[in-house]
Length: 405
Image (cartoon, rainbow, N blue to C red):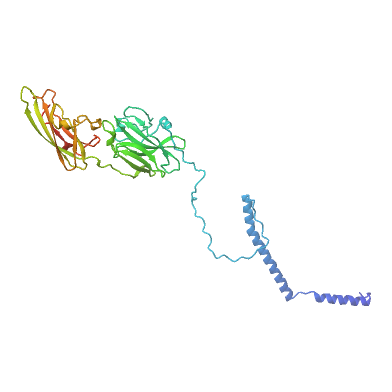
């Protein structure tokens, strides 16, 4: 440097002195400055690592699910205050709560036609005791129709009814089946349905005869699924006139296992149309003067009406075996209508609580023949239409003849 121009040396010296004064040398201040810078760098690195730890599982789970809506990294992170609300209750463990499934099979349509039921083999509920032993079968039955055979299960002519009686939102079929045991038949109201394979199956018996009544007249299904059955106390057959029959409507519902009565009367009780007639008799037998071998028999019947119904007319039966010879024969109707059960005489009746006397005179043989019998005389209540009605106590409106004819 000694060969440098003195002026140049002065300028280099001044420049070096100026630069040295601007450069911080090692010392406490410089050490604190470096430490603060390192701490800031460490904090930034830790925050970056935390963001990576949070975002990485979300991105990974989205990739595993094949989720097309992958999360986008946030551009900035704003600090949030910790939540003070309680965490949501986790769902209960175990089997999931059942929900209506669109895949569940719908209940089959149980609408069955008459022809379909006749063509199928079915199982029937039990018949009243003694009917099955007589031949009214219940297993694998092929129903018949228009038959007069006895102890054969048959389908009646009554109309079918269709409706949802078991609550499965599909219709079932209600029909009346019968089994003849003579002039009359036992009957059942039976509910039929189809299984998932379309086969006809028996749901159950709604009701049958023998349960406090002897005939089933009709059935109907209400909108709520209950079954109304019109029943009758007697069967109009075998010489029993139809006007004697009383009817009731009883309601039954399916409870999941069987049909039970839910409405309507449960018994018929006494027939309010009937009354109690009571009869006593006196007689007088005398010989007929002359060569006639016959004798005169005078019968006097006292009839009392013990109630509770006025008897518009009374009918006498079985006053036979002789020739009419006087008394009330002249004022009685000897040939009333056939509904009066062909009485021997029909006369004005007896109000409740009163008595009437009726006299009949006959000529009868002097000696009974080999075929003679001891007849019994009966009195019956008849209405104004000449219709004969049973008596509430038959034993006290009947008396035997005093002699054989």
